[in-house]
Structure formats: C-alpha cells, structure tokens
Length: 145
Image (cartoon, rainbow, N blue to C red; front, side):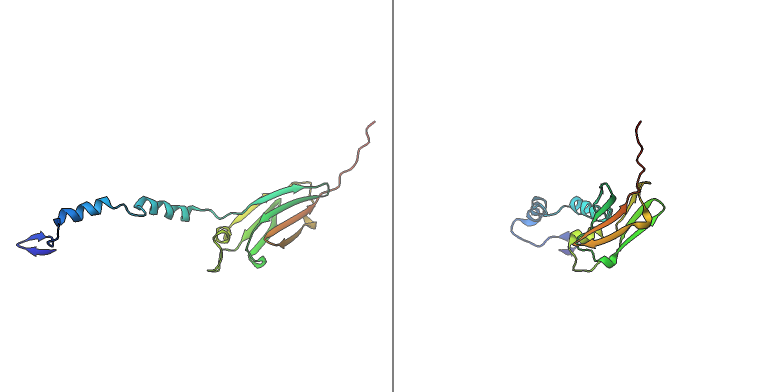
C-alpha cells in the first residue's frame, strides 16, 4: 500500500483489492484460534497421574502403581499414619516419551486398611511397576459351639 493525499491505495493487481479480501476469507486456516486456545488449556489443566491397583490375598494387602519409564530414583514412597503416599519427581528429561511426561509431578494417596502391619511393608520396582506389599494381621479363630 502507498499513501496518496491521505488515502490508502492498494497495489494494482489483477482483480484489485477485492480479490485479496475474498481470498483471505475463503481460505480456511489449518488450525483456528479456538483450536489453539483448547490446546493451551488441555496442556495446562492436565493433572499428572498414574494408575493404581489394590489387591488382597489371604496374607497380603498389595498396592500396585504403573509408572512406565520413570527411574526408581525419581519415585518416593511414604507412609503417614494410615495413608500410603506415592510421589513422582517433576523434573523430566527432554528425551522422555509423552506418556512419561504426563506422570511427572504426580502424587497419589492411598488409604491403608487397619488390618495390615505397616511396620513390615515392602516395596519393589521392576519394569515400570511399583508394588508395595503389606502383611495382614493374623486373626484369631473362634470356635463355634
């Protein structure tokens, strides 16, 4: 555009300025502004988490956490009163897979039943699976008369 006598004048092109305006409104962008806003909030509002499974056998109460790709050094397991707290450190390597990044910074709290021996709990981590095992208290058999 150039200014002449205070008025903006478009370059002279075949079809004139209306052709440019029509092309602008007829071409649909690959991603709209609303798509970009949705992506922004999806990324920001995604709460880091991981899957937890609880299981019982006759002798044990077992908590299993799925933590694929997380090194053992980045996992913290703590017992506070009757709650088991599993935390994954936030710092992530740039080369990590997207699924691993979604676990980073996650924290899960699991309520432990009163019938387990928390002093004898054991935890092991292998192939992305954390298992915390609590032995159950032995009950007393009551004879029925």
